[in-house]
Image 1: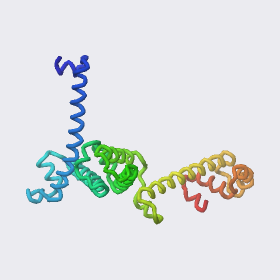
Image 2: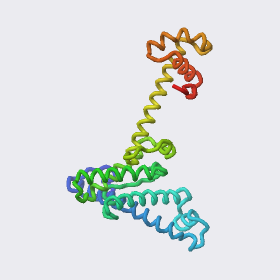
Image 3: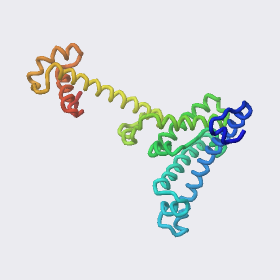
Image 4: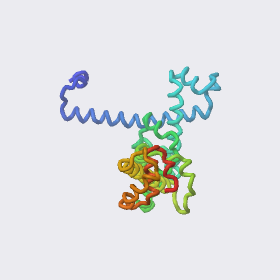
Length: 258
């Protein structure tokens, strides 16, 4: 049976299916390894400033002339190298492992690199915490390379999936003693979610207030009508009026002080 027939959707027997699966598995493993090899070589070339030696004005000019790679792709390769280097350094610092682990699970597609740009510290904090947890559970025994690879891959997936917390927001409040960076990040994230939920509830109360007392009616006249509604909800009349102003303006500053 020829390859063309298989590509056209022709049936295969079990032996051929196993053979194709083995080929696919090998191709995936090669792709995983190739991404990390590429990252290391990009990093080495950039650190050596090879473009200056070869007479190019910039890294992007070098990449275009030598490899036919556009500017955005050239710099995305540097992002890939930075992410891979950070992961490699975290694993090495935590476990003393070098390159043996990294072709087991990790894949860094272009989209992942874009998502992780600017979040490398967040990623490495999460990897370090999970590696430490895994080592404690193993009683200090060496972790199998496939376990390490799985931890790294899941951390990449989890960081990409969760909301970004800007570094400035983390720095706005001092981290309490005894909190690891990743643990504090989780607390800040939960806090953000609670604040967002609270603001959404305040806006809904404001919309309710507008249904009772339309926007064209001044606060002074609205107060008497809204007082029993506020009492039923369990808030003050002043807060009810603030929610109403928030719903009218859409400006969260209307809730200052509440």
